[in-house]
Length: 370
Length: 121
Image (cartoon, rainbow over all chains, first blue to last red; front, side, top):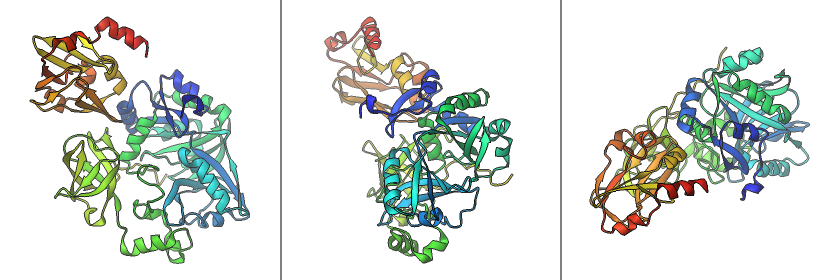
């Protein structure tokens, strides 16, 4: 794709002014890092508060007579049970139980379901929803809204100065409320493992709100490079890398997204495969790996058992700035997925010792009680 | 010191060439977290992979700017890869090569030519 074809977010000018290095991502020109660089931006977010532009992600309202029950036809989550003011992580499933995309769906108010999907998948996602739920829901894509994420141990204090009501929210709460001089949709969530918020704002006010948040010395802008290393440490899968249309939520270690109530009903796409995997175990499983020696093992590196036989592949990996050593996630047979299992990762032809470890690699700090 | 378009530098003393990456390259890479240096004794031709330098984000190849045999690798980079960012054009060197053909060195860009080249990027 040529640069000319890239879309921009409402914050593009602010990124360039802040010294961002812009790269193509999900069809958009996005900041991969600012002047501090990935390592310092990562550590800043873990210690203070990082501000991310995630406006490339797809925001939409699904409306209809019963949008919650309709949404259950394409996801394995309990959406009929989703209470007003709450948000849920879920997956769009294909007929064979593979993941079309992962997403957040929320009820910030009484206006149907508010969904946020991955930028690279959004056009297909909304086509799938439109096809599968034709006549049941209408989709309004919120193209005129930007999405900001503020993440880190000081994020709540920063947001609370402007919006005291945000301090009364807990992890995965979602609200429509007046704030920052406009009407916002805000959830206490994110994709870094830290406490924080994602805030949907009108596009024409995005730069003003971005700059207002950056006036606080605890806040720095953080690029996609650190966003990726933060979510890796948090053990969170990245769609298109750790999860795709061939991978089931059980294989991906996302069984929590398959509602217990609906496991018996088997009323979602690919339920036969998913029920079988729940009962008998999947043929492969996403695990966390600590690389014990040598270079970082990155996406595509083979995973071998101690005899050297290839048993799987790394789907995300890199150096962990918080831990100071390389970590990875990848798929291995269940027999080799137990914590403490010794494995090898093959980097540039050389086997290096690795061990299956628990995820998240870095403890998450979600605020579940206030 | 001579330079390549891939942003390696070479310093020659007698028939031993010291190789590293330029300050420009180190800045572009960002914080270096791992360096894979070549084995002593390995023979490389100009343009062959010589080392791998890794940031948080990605791994990048460092190419041999000149043909030769590796006589020493910078062991300090194992414990202190950040040296590449701190002093890229001195202490952050990757390897020393015993070279056979000094003409390869002479054919590379001098500093003025390299700086002109950077101006075009």
